[in-house]
Length: 358
Ligand code: FES
Ligand SMILES: [Fe+2]
Image: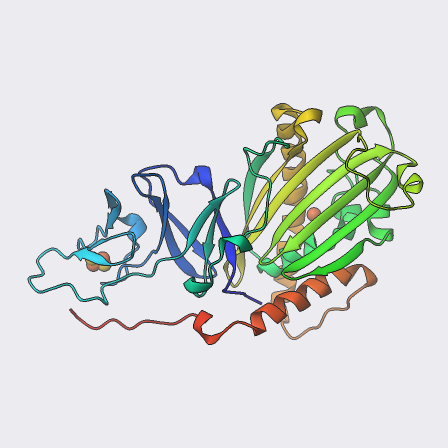
């Protein structure tokens, strides 16, 4: 299940410093990222037209990149503008693919499909490292698993009770209570109260409470963006609100935001980007680091389970799954993603180019 007309998180912005060629892969498209001299980003096919050497092993020359195998030089628009030793004009087909690229909320996003449809307004609003309301710390993990297994994990948090009983201290209610799940044009929204439960995280004013009511609400958007707000209140708050969402002016014991992105790097591998931290008025960078340390322990627990699941799944690809009531999120998300994939025009499909000799 892979959508091409979509923005994919390819890197944290701090991973692309000036003067560096950074190789990445999104669904087997090799891409090299770098910055022009004015700081703006370029995303080019990381494959020279001559003999397919990666341009990421090349050399930056101003805003251009020179292949360091036989010296062809490419401009940010993908066109070759120098071929050492070539006496005739450089043909138009001496050109690598360029990808629309955007920098937003500390993430670098690339559009894999039809460039004419690359609308920056389709980039969901995540919480980045410079957010005015939340202070977050960031990390990433590589997975040896299909990205959809990670998406399934994030669209159904019932696993918290079992996979994260120790790291997050999640109790059984995460498995036994059902969230509200709604369809969105390019994803789903999942919201719920978990009542009288151990605080996750047990920090700030929540640290002195052995149990709290936890409100969590997240949007899960294509291709795999998890954007969750969580707020902890004294036990009894959910009942007082008749299980409705907490009003904005209701002061919590602690609240936080996490932005996560799952990017398929190949059909069986993925990169998982994440950030988490408290509201600035309820915590600081040290608390954000503590939270990230907890989260990284938890995300390694997910990784162990999901990679093992992938291994078993790969033994018998024809074997079906047996959904449970908690799978409403994953099932609805699959349907929405499939609908978007079905609606893609042929122009979005990946095309192979055969190059003739110069
Ligand atoms: S492979 Fe790039 S110039 Fe030969
Ligand atoms: Fe998890």
